[in-house]
Image (cartoon, rainbow, N blue to C red; front, side, top):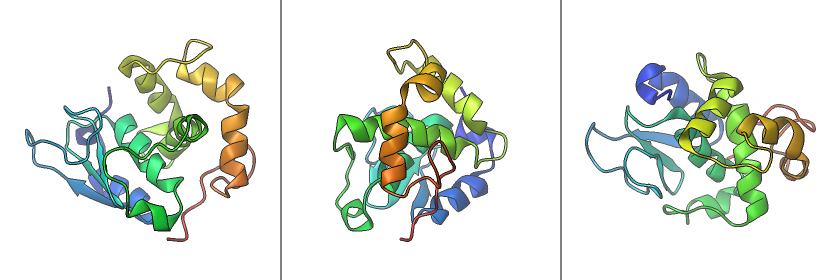
Length: 160
């Protein structure tokens, strides 16, 4: 499983900044504020994504994607749980893989593989199968909100 320690933290901070978010690095061994899953999983408070060096990259991207899909005025209200609906959760799973392409040394293939290793479950049996063959509604959800530049396209930086 790829962790933040395996990649450049500055690249992660720059990616989040392009979407109006901040990264707060938590000292090793300390609890991660706003973590839904606990342990080493990323956490959310307002527009800040909290993570440690042992946080899986896919976890950070998933939580960041939850904030990215929210209108800026709703981001400030988030603490720990940002999910609004099943449709939003599905879209976040697609967006986190797309965001992986924007991090050197990561890419969507690694994000999808790590999602499977972590234990995400999808109807077709894998994150890749969902992403490629079963996520049409999620792609449409993202496109309708201007979060990707075209159906099955690239993420668009937030205006916030």
